[in-house]
Image (cartoon, rainbow, N blue to C red; front, side):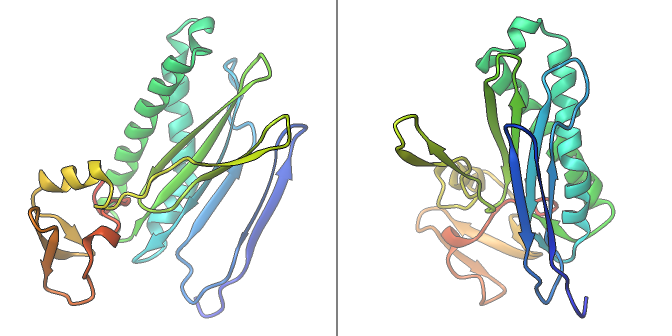
Length: 223
């Protein structure tokens, strides 16, 4: 795109508001979405917001922004519809159901993009479940190194920062172990050999130097 344009939107309800602005860049590969009270079923409504850092083109980030949150919500509602009303309000049930719904949705969209494009994208989304008792449950789903950070204000006025996501990089212990057990690891189509004893990499490209700083998961690049 010769002249990228600024994307922006804002909106709100009685208890929830949002504002988003995407700054123009030379390549227009990033996408976002904002959705207030997405589902209209008898189950508690869900608002969701997401950011997708595209690479290698915009097809992956565009598809994620258009479809991923709807698929996660649909999967979650399917799981909740088989449970009792009281059970769906329990955090333990809700968290497990959300994880299952998000994993399935991300795997499906990853598979679809692999068959149609070489573009990839990180994906970070936040879901706000509006409960009938006026409480809200906030859940986060992510792949890659796009971050979600929460900001909390207590009744006494004190504030705190909550890191809701963790970058999918080899510096994260569980990612390091995943790479240990993974064959044919690739980064932007460059074969990588990981020496797990010294935590160094040898590649065919000189621009990949420190494995701890390289994102090792994204849509269409291994999730």
